[in-house]
Length: 166
Ligand SMILES: [Zn+2]
Image (cartoon, rainbow, N blue to C red):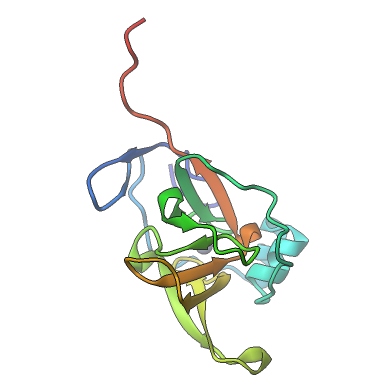
């Protein structure tokens, strides 16, 4: 089944140091192009404001604070973007990660709005705005991906270990 327009099934297998591997569907990084009217139908009002109009949610509004293994997906197109083990508490009020799930799942754009030069982070597949990346994160990357929680959808990782046979 395709990943669009619905959500991926969320079944993953952790395999090797490279991280996520899909069991069912190969990740397609082919661009998704939709009109803003189409996005409006898919996204909530607040998601549309943040993801398509480069808004920023208020800090500490994150409705989830997951502390379980899983993958954070683009709320617009479902592309996996960040992993739980790359998340850290930055104290900023936004979910923060020191690296994306894979380098080519996000794209960067210079953002000179609000009198600052910042590096905007976008979903590589649907070009939705996710947040910004800053220096000052933890090792090994020392990057801090500061992401709007509303732009992400968390899908828990299913443990593929066989049961204990009971
Ligand atoms: Zn996307």
